[in-house]
Image 1 (cartoon, protein in one colour):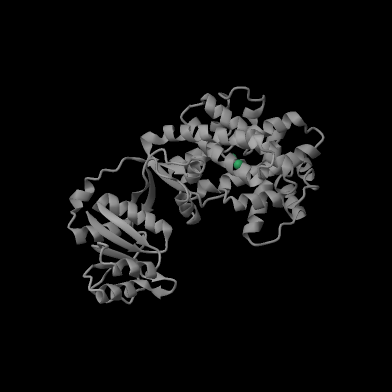
Image 2: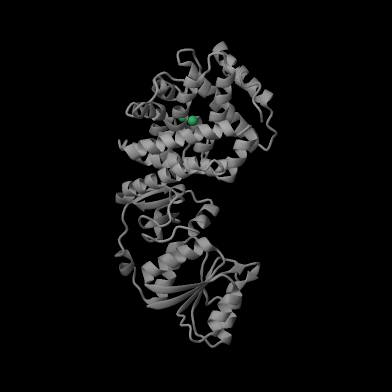
Length: 452
Ligand SMILES: [Fe+2]
Ligand SMILES: [Fe+2]
């Protein structure tokens, strides 16, 4: 077994390197987050070191060059590999330019230790299935090995193990979230047992939330987002188990509580931003707030509509989670079909997501009458396929409320993205023009009293 020292202050890179070097080169890995720690480690001759990796710059200092000097001064003839391109280290020192080039990192260690490509290829990889990173949050230990996906220079994906089964999830998972990573990968055959485990845990958590009236809105929203993703993982393949139903019910009730508790749009936005919620979830919650306001202020609105609304909010875009999981950077639904990043299969899902969700909800026990139709019509077409360009009167009134609420949400988020101030009257004027039939205008008018 060889010994590797890594000098890097980047936690995510450290865990990626550690796991991969352990797996592929069978090495023992020590990480030091600063040059000082590394020097202490190098100066102690009891520490065996066969190879050193150093990020070129830590805190604006050429750490790699300084580490190289310390190795020479301490008469330790140890090869050093520089990660990144900014170091002034002499030419004989090897460099891996891109810190995320995991293959390059492994290859350089393999060259040093004489491990062959064949040895490495024999470490066979299973097929991987994307899991939203949030699905890990409620758990303490990983239910199965977990991987991080990297796109190589040749465009192919490679998968690097970051958690082994039964490893502690916290606080390590936070580093990945902080890096903006929203999806991790598990071996495909483990996906259902993983989702089942998360389901049971979330049901417990939501029960706890119910019993504690002081639970913060942010915590509730976070659990519901985990819940949506967990349910989505299971209903695609026809599993509507009693646990999935229980979790869905708990999530829907929690959404209603939140919508009743938060006084204004700003409050909701703040919580969603703090939670780093994905677009799909954020837009449903904001639209839910807007739609509840409409139902409170339109003459035909009542409690039975709100009961239906909670089902619609929870399930209407459930089928899109598989698309957003692979493309977390994307937003507005109707633009997705023109996006060149989406595969043809993904575009099919986008086009038919309303119809598919409507078909799935039919299997849901005790689903209120009419929910299926509203979900089917939530993009303005009566068959649930595609996106209407011309909004007509041939759909249910509650579907119209949903359409106006989602359009309001989209306009508001776009205004924020442009860095402009949100003015409700401006958005309402836009809606009146885009949805000019008087049944739609009535709904838009009910939003005049909405509080920012
Ligand atoms: Fe949708
Ligand atoms: Fe939607």
